Amino acid sequence: MKKVVQHLRLEAGLNRVKVSQAAADLKQCCLQNAHHDPLLTGVSSSTNPFRPQKVCSFL
Image (cartoon, rainbow, N blue to C red; front, side, top):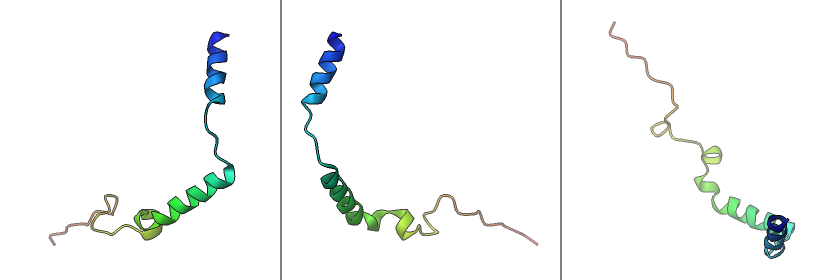
């Protein structure tokens, strides 16, 4: 019971952030870092480690 009470006291002492404020902060962070996101900007073929390997033929 002491551990439970101690854990509840710890949780009660945490500063809470409103969901609307957290969502606004998350949106702002996403918009600021969008130019670094490879899912949005794409990956150049020279730096893509998953590009298909070129076939070498000596015919």
